[in-house]
Image 1 (cartoon, rainbow, N blue to C red):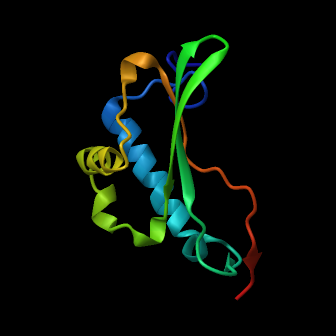
Image 2: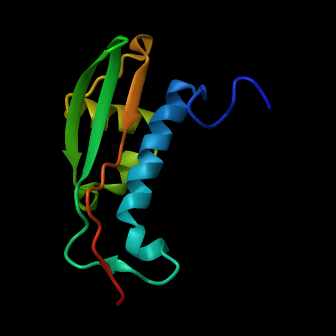
Length: 117
């Protein structure tokens, strides 16, 4: 197994790779009806995503900052570069401080209601 691993809990990424992976996740989430194998779609509209940024402050405490994102209202150009993703996150008042070992949880889905077309 290579070290550092390129996926999983202990993976290491460059900052550009981090921002592009955030963009990829948002883009894929908004494309769910187009990319599902059985043609599933949301009953209503695509639900918002919640982007949560957690910083490890102490072993037993986390600093948390969350923002709701509605993917269908976003311009595809936001996802073209890490600089545009950085700007998008800044508009949400989310500034990545990579020195503080962030843990980012992009999609928190409590209930997904899908229906066949």
